Length: 138
Image 1 (cartoon, rainbow, N blue to C red):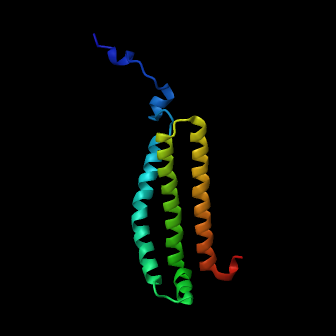
Image 2 (image 1 turned 180 degrees about the horizontal axis):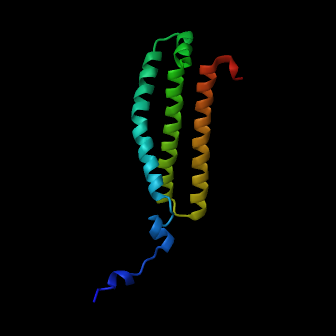
Image 3 (image 1 turned 180 degrees about the vertical axis):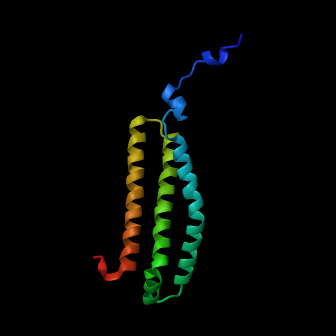
């Protein structure tokens, strides 16, 4: 006769969660992966950013505008802004979730964190597009 003890274990997870393999919140692994992917993508993007800034050193205003207006440079800067601000938002979200214990403060901090990341990203993207596209944007 077979031992059925494995079948009688008590589980706190719902049958659907056991099938999907999800944790309590249902998205922890996705959050972890996105944070790691943005960390890895930041490496070449930040190296490229530093090279671009070094190329701008000592340039005149017109030369700097010409460098930033190059499509490849503008795309690299746009990708860097998106990756860095998303990585920043996810990192701060982890800190807030781990160290802010009051539910009201936690929700307020998470909302403020999202707004801050979006505002920084939009301001940077607008500046890059304004310089790279010239007079097309107002």
